[in-house]
Amino acid sequence: MEYRKRVAAVYLLGFFIDLANLFVGNVAFPDIARAFHRDVAELAWVGTAYILGLTAVIPLGNWLAARWGGKRVFVASLLLFMAGSAGAAQAGSLGALIAWRALQGLGGGLLIPLGQTMTYRLYRPAERPGLTALILLVSQLAPALSPTLGGLALDALGWRWIFWLNLPLAAVPLTLALRWLRDEREPEPAAGLDWLGLLLGSLTLLLVLQGLGDLAQPSTWARGGALLAAGLALGAAYTRHSRRHPQPILRLELLRDPLLRMSMLMYLLVPGVFMGVSLVAMLYLQQVLGVPASIAGLLMLPWSLGSFAAIALTGRGYRRLGPRPLLMAGALAQGIGFLSLLAIDRSGQLSWLAGSYALMGLGGTLCSSASQSTAFLRVEPVRMGEASALWNINRQVSFCVGMALACVLLNLLLAGQGIADPAAPAARELSVRAFHLCFLAAALAMLPPLWLGSRIGNAEVLRLLNRPRMGEA
Image 1 (tube, rainbow, N blue to C red):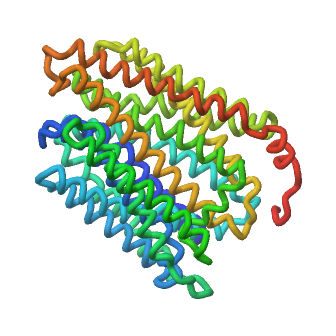
Image 2: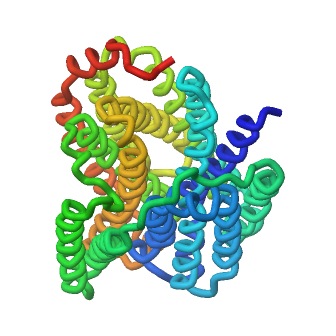
């Protein structure tokens, strides 16, 4: 096998592991909530901690690889991920589980940007579309397979096996990386790292998300407001810092490009909201309606079918139609998918559920694929790495914010109905109403991206797409 194909195989396996762990935890959340007797807002941190770890470490990838080599950093990341998985499987409290999930994220966070850098440099521009197709395939297989297999493991073995199974899964790319990857480093020494910027950015995200979680609790709303305000203040401080620093950890002036800015906002508003709805729907189906975890996990299969259809539509229509119709159709389809969940009030409506998830997969992926195709059209080649880091962090943040806001809203609705335990049979009718209101709010949240999609400069994008670009083979 060619060396570049070996590198691509290792990268794609790491990519699969990262994405699988974003989705598989949702299936286990009801069982984890029962095991630790904790509420929805606290439970959200099991997923959020993993994404926080993923996000915080992304800017470090190139800096670490330049000093210790891509192979060493990739192997160390996998070992850290495996340690976090083993710790999560043995966690004796929700706090311990959240901490181990954060460690998992720190280990897994380098696998995507580092593997992508090592792989793409080995392929000529004319060969990269085929590589991109493989990446898109993996990006759909992971959310389709991980909840399904995770649900089967959950029903048969318990929630801890969701994390134990990561060990043999991660052992495969670890073994291949040790055998196949060359010990190479960047030819030039890396520039000094913006440690202050990294600290400010990480604290901003942490305080904002913790503040949102605390706002959902009547007893902690004052603390939540204070943490949220502190997070926004630190975000403003980072913005000032990045303008003055010669090499900031994130170059925010790239957001002056309206195509990149609008694409990132679209990703924040559409796929991010789906992550929140996905978590809420899993709680609803399993806790309130009594759907088995293995059946609930299977719903990501129709989601993936809708997503595959969206990828095909984007591939065929983007260059001809531009992003505007795809973005508007995507926001509309996902909104209808959310609305259709209002008809679900018993466990036997699997066909309707499958249709809802297919619509969500179609709509969300139309928006994400069209956004990603648009984001970098005007980014200079020398800034592509920095823009890519900004894009990937925004992607992770969208998942964090989507889950946090969905859990805040659901917790407020349940508290407003006086529901302490959504699974209690006596509270079933009120619980259904609370979850339905959450789905309705998510559907209404698709109106801003629908408007935003209508405002994108479609004619300009079509001109850029049909203009020959320098340096392309």
